[in-house]
Length: 310
Ligand code: MTE
Image (cartoon, rainbow, N blue to C red; front, side):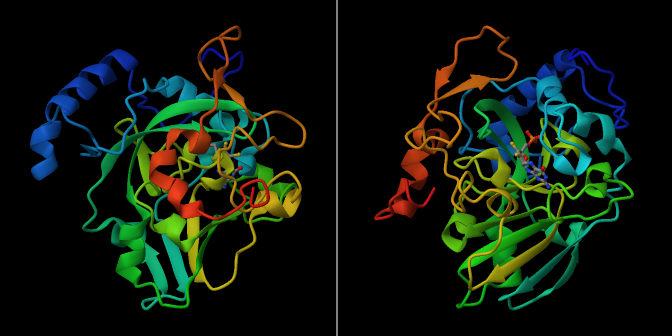
């Protein structure tokens, strides 16, 4: 790690980039073939993900960038803390409680959640509210697939999510920084949108702990804090759920949190961003409405005043 601190990651098999590039080229070559059926062969992705038409064609950040510069307050507030401390989190076994307005509530093991699911590689730009961004090749599946499995009832209007609470393994939770658990929420139509995924890996590796193992949300048109990590509970509700950053500072962080260059954070402009890994003097780039996914998602907010519903 070259960020000026030592990392004690204990997921020991981080793939060197050169080796990964080879695998990736093979994988993309096999993409067309793979779309129709199962991929086989030892050179292919460990997670056997097919490539997705929803991906951007932006160049992904390195695995090093993606796994060493993180926000995961359960492990501390420094960008290096998750890489330093998340290695000790036990992620197997793992289950998710699914409850509220669903036909089949219950505790679902990760195996049940993943059974019958096709994992796709999706390259999404991920933008943090602090004005930096990364491009990440996530591996995951549409949240709507899981919601269909459990059966959403007609009164449901929102989906809420909670992260694990386990202070023995999450040192940041020994401080009352946040009213734990970390919580997030989406409106049901946002949750059902095909861009919204539950990710279980990145590149072709299982999800690194610091990125939210074993399963986390990715909502690419919203600021990064909506993409809650290490999910243990999903509830379907009639009322808009509480969300952690809105609870901490409602003036700065709204429920919607759509990436919007025209609506500034009260303390800084949201009009441009720094791509992580571009070097300290890299030119900032203009932030795009809905993080570049306007064509796909603008319709969800027709008639809403996005300066009010920030
Ligand atoms: N999820 C939990 N449980 N705890 C957190 O502190 N931080 C959020 C989000 N999900 C966070 C979380 C924020 S602010 C960002 S920008 C992204 O995770 C960072 O994801 P990454 O570290 O994989 O880039």
